[in-house]
Length: 214
Image (cartoon, rainbow, N blue to C red; front, side, top):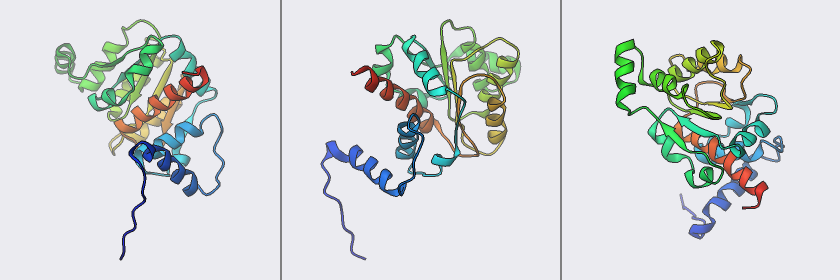
């Protein structure tokens, strides 16, 4: 089989990728306010199923962007997710990105309480001030703990991005978040990942930057 390569300049690769995504969507019309986010997740994962499995609470896009405009910080459940979020853009609005998974006090709390570090890191984040966005791409236990904290009235996130990947309690943890009253963006089913969580964060940041004219 003869392989034909596209001649694309390095600076045009992302633009061409999004053109291909548009072509392969086959004329499907996505909700206008969510389309850039859905396409960025597809761009990150090369998985078109996200056009169907990403679920959004009512009004979540505007509520998420308002939280960012108000200086919301983002808490991730992995260093990979932390590394993937565009900190330069977030810092324009006064927010920072945090991941507590490697903190010594989190490790000690997890051992003391017989939980995962992901659970202990959510407990630590619950004491933070200001609006918080949680971007969970790996640990369903983190998502379950968020659900518990929300139900107990100890935490009211500005947004929960629930996209852990895997098999054990992954589907269930996402469904729990969708039962709460907090704004959420969830990938229903087993698929997700830290890269998807970061892509959703970045999509929100880039969309907000475009409306701001930066």
